[in-house]
Image (cartoon, rainbow, N blue to C red; front, top):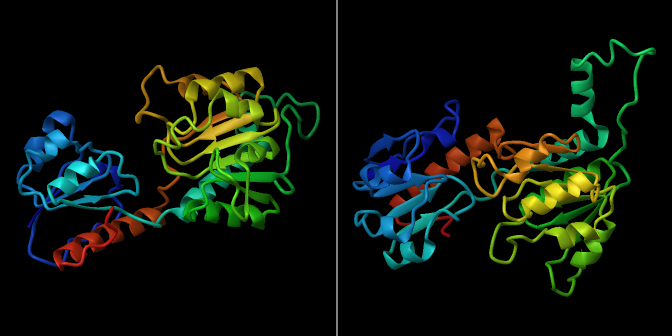
Length: 315
């Protein structure tokens, strides 16, 4: 089988990406732009992709293709209906980054509540050196312990974040889906937003969750509340979030994702970086060395299972 990885640079060079244990050829491309997709993929029996878009038009030109092994959990970049029509199996990576994303989410909460970045920058600017005493209190510092953490998304990512949050004394509340009567163990969506000290998002991006948080939802939140999004860009309306941060509608926010990645120069969240109450990280919440190695191992396991006639992690 011919195996082609279209965007190898989406994994670090340090990761051990072992080769499958069956006869094959292997071709790596650091990246593949839309114009290169056909040239890079036309002889592949198995395509490995992370973020390269595989739409119906390109899939129709790949008659040899039998498996698309997505090197991520999200499969928004693959036309699943077109793949099914051509009897192309699509597999993804599952349950591999919960600890990494949970730690990233909690780390962002700590940073905002304790104003770690603001104090670090103040020291860089000479503020401590000019202080009349041993410390200074330019920015408020609050404990996370005792605060209500509302989580949207009760899958493995939300559960891992809840576990860490409880360990530091936060009260965890799972929000019900929007416009749905709350099930046991969940709180009505609007009620949950209104009581949140911190709102952390861990649901997938879908037609139901696109623009889930807009001006209306942000207006429900406390002025003292924080919003954390390590899920997907597009769940939070970026223009609405920028307005809420500027106006004091909420106290702060941190995002690891944006609606278009990499972001365009006019993305509202790039403007928000000038604010002291906002943190933007480049979609690296998942990328601990341990999680990335787990992804790489599972990716090859998926390919080997397909070769053995027992596909796993099918989407």
